[in-house]
Amino acid sequence: MQKTIEKIIKSHEGEKGSLIPILQDVQRECGYISEEAVAAIAKDVKISEHEIYGVATFYAQFRFTKPGDHLIKVCVGTACHVRGNSLNLMHIKKILGIDEGEITFDYRFGLETVNCLGACALAPLVTVDDEYYGNFSPIKLKKILSKYAKEKAGAEDEED
Image 1 (cartoon, rainbow, N blue to C red):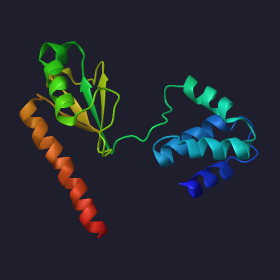
Image 2: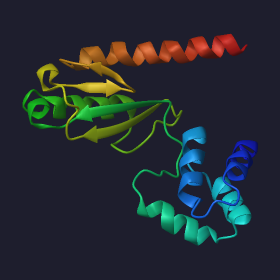
Image 3: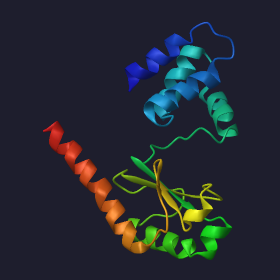
């Protein structure tokens, strides 16, 4: 990760107002902005870590914790709510053992709620990454989670 951060900082060398583009590039490449990244940026850009955190926390786009491999978004908009997605959300939280805004201990899944996913005809709706799962139910949840578990297992087999 250190080499990636150094390369990003170097690509913005000499640019005025480069802090936000550097933070964006670090997050795009690393998935989040680590303490290590903040320290490296502070050293090379010659501003304090406090200033970096001050800028980065002002914008909602930046995160300081490693995200899950897969992001589950549960729609809580009117159509999805009326069709029972609040119960689906409770079930997802119970199965994963996390709350909204949290990540599973193995970093496999992150969970968020959104006000609308823009596909009300499919309500209740959940997405995993960019894949939509309409008419969502707890039965579908088990199939979906097992699909992503198999993908992870397959990737680990290839590494051996």
